[in-house]
Length: 380
Image (cartoon, rainbow, N blue to C red):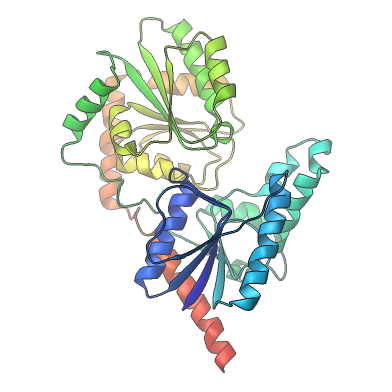
């Protein structure tokens, strides 16, 4: 079976990108020939896949995306496949892996000028092309809340939307030598005795609420000056705005920007708390990764996987509407080492009792089943 997998940009540190790569690997293991179309690819390529970089340029992303789709459709017309799977929203997909939040919901919260910009009109129309009548035959969603939001805006039939189970990649596993690795990692970071280490993990700093976390750190330093506090920022994104914020708040020594990292497991072991006050998040695999690693979490309830944090008793879920003071108080709750230990043990127990690993295998099986039915129908 020949499949085209469409993704605008691949880099090793994005949640969507990691999902994409693992689903592609699962499809290969099931005997599929995977052809990947992308604009940019950073890092090692997927062995055995046909990687086709699309050589188009434009002054704006949305114009470039239109050129990308034109190129892909032309290429597929001369070299067809059995099915087209998209990991970004665009017309012409057979299956859409829904890792991104609802753009229509975001648009409803923005001003008139933005809603009528060419960029907004582009993304709104392409989301409509996926979820509206005549759109993708199957949409693989990552959470109930994400599915409900899309259904509210597009009235997408339930039969077209298939809910995937939670999924953490195999490299996120609580190791047998966790305590030793934690000690080594904290020594490498020069963490002082008694210092509380907060972790912000994920690309897309504004969406993840990094500015909210930095503001909370500044407030806590004033309120609890005796508590040594450090924030590690891990992810691949433009950091200038957030560095300036930290400097303005006199946090240059308290906020470390580490960029994209391969040693995320060790950084999670070194940390005392994951802080994730996201503005919107379709799922938030980092929350599942924290649970698996026994790392307590503070998260906003807009994240699709926030319910796992609550069910695991692995941290605190902040209710909407967001309150900066709520975030500050929640983080300060974790100054208590006994409470952190309770959350860690509860998270590890939840990991043993709950399936948090099967997203990508189930997604690959669903893709194969749908495409097989389509190709059988054509032959008949």
